[in-house]
Length: 313
Image 1: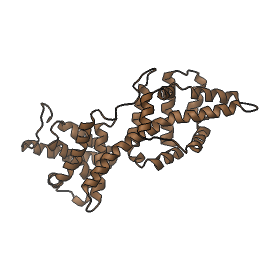
Image 2 (image 1 turned 90 degrees about the vertical axis):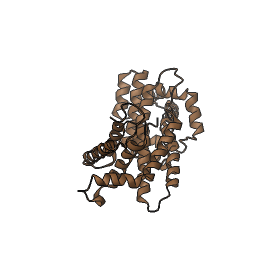
Image 3 (image 1 turned 30 degrees about the vertical axis):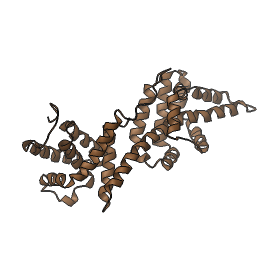
Image 4 (image 1 turned 180 degrees about the vertical axis):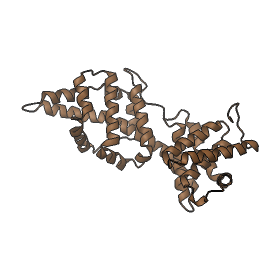
């Protein structure tokens, strides 16, 4: 789940905050950086747990509707088919998912009013009405519906976003990664499958080492990295180069010079992608031009040491 691009993003965010604080304690920032990974995974579980929690709410609404003097057949059908959603059933029947929620102390307590407001909007939403009319309540269509609901909640339902952000301060920073991972989790679900959750890390030890090294080495070699950039931006007023661009370029060069198993092209391309997310529209071309000039000079001076064939090209 926590892939290398996300780790680069977290390192960048930490370095940006560190750079803006005069006399900042690098050790404290690194500690906060590492603890933030757990919060990201917890946020992912929290959002995934919304599905069975909301189904419990719908089941209560179903019983209330059935008990009315004049129940609505349409409402009963809608509540029934949503409560019977295959995706949620798979999650509910997963011991690994239940255990993960307990270990990470994930809870949706105090959410009843929010669920009621969501239901008021959702029951008349076109995607729910179209799902009901189609009458195809299989796993494939249930996946599409659940994925659509989560996307709608995170992108358009402000009360939901406020509720999550109040509990997870990292919501704004981690929202994109978490929602993408949720969608992948949902699409990968299979009936009677024991594998529900993705691995938190592909290799936790390596991931943590990469994150620590990227943060530490970027600070340790800051002056050297800044000199490399300054030499290729002599026609620029250094004070006018955006801090975001400087940090991204320094991180890229740090990887190029001090991460022996990461290809040069991979490092540069990754930070160009981050520039699209965090900097101005013109930054991509500027950063690309500077990094290209610096890496050419580094090659000439034999200052790029990679351990495998093809990692320099």
